[in-house]
Length: 116
Length: 114
Image 1 (cartoon, each protein chain N blue to C red):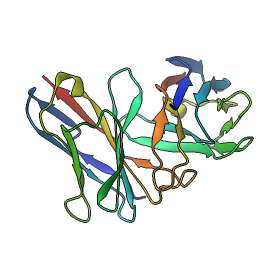
Image 2: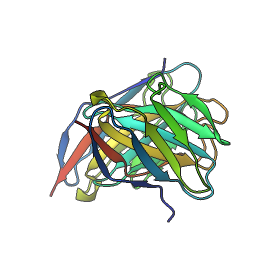
Image 3: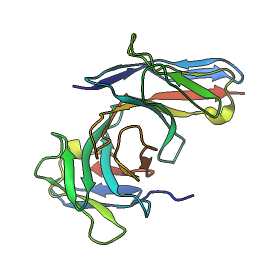
Image 4: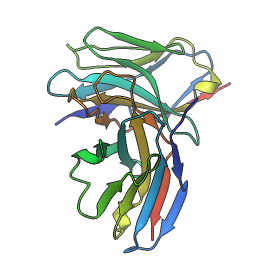
């Protein structure tokens, strides 16, 4: 069964450093998403991406964040200068269609980011 | 804005017990409702969904009914198994074309003991 993969599974970085989280969505999917979950809190939407551009972003997704689909398979989330409060589990997701009520989003296992 | 409130965990039950995990929501318009499950070391998996009032989603013995009058989507299972131990997330999506942004609850950790 096709699945979304994410690398690395755990990333430790120093405050102020740049990190890139990588995701390989399911191959025929067209919509891509990033979510995050700070320990003990809700899973929060960060950004959605379609047709090589951001379709929606949350207020969390400020200028320190960017997303890219550099080739036909990868989807990346970059945090330019990490802060302590960026420590969280980051989930990538993809869907075949974006319509509400569709088959749903498929999630990767997550990357745990720890900022020291 | 949209929000989802679900039952605080953790929840511990014996095998074959009846399970209910409560979920209520606040939304404008007519959201779709979902339950996702996360098994240890894995990503969130769609468990079931409902797209309109009175719809019942079901999968793997789990059920949830979209109740517009009480803005609820409670998850139930008649007889749980040890393999059902996981974290369960209630979620809703906006009916915005081309963007199925999900709003999640905090998750409820369920542990089933033999």
